[in-house]
Length: 228
Image 1 (cartoon, rainbow, N blue to C red):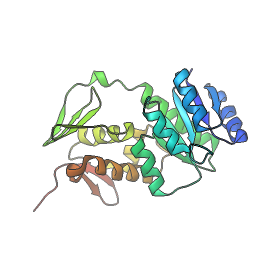
Image 2: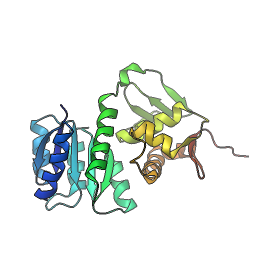
Image 3: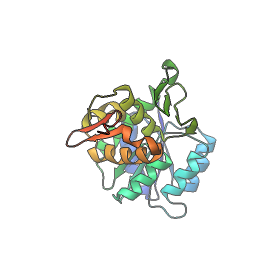
Image 4: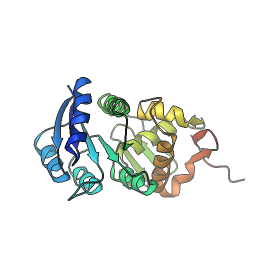
């Protein structure tokens, strides 16, 4: 039974989420602030964390940063803000998904299920072949990316996105297809989620950002740009 940590300073929201999550068969623990969430994660293994952005004391971003110092547990952030900067900040720190308040509890459960399916079925050791594109190398077994021999640690979702694009070199992948194959759901995803992750991923791979090409009105493809 997956164990979920629900972190929010609003007890009514925690109870609402817990009610729906337990109906889905999840075991739930509540934390009223970021410090309590960090303490709980250091004491008990969790399969996923729901983390509110706006909390007294350490906010969601500070809590996320603290968690990522010792754990790669999947994290979905709950936010009343929908600004691109906030999302980019979260993705760079390693968040797996965002859900904007007010949200549909059923959609939240769908997103939780998608993240859990993806992370629990991940078997990186089964794929060991390096993918190399000039100075950019992707190592699926260790989930490592190197740029000109220097290791770059990508947030989990950005690695999955880069690997999916690289596996399909020269093939245009629509935003919906990327949502389905990388995020693990088909209908409750927002195409802007893909765009935001692509923007952050391009920043992380720096000089090789042009390998990820935008196909306007469709999606993205991975190939060397035509300089002519």
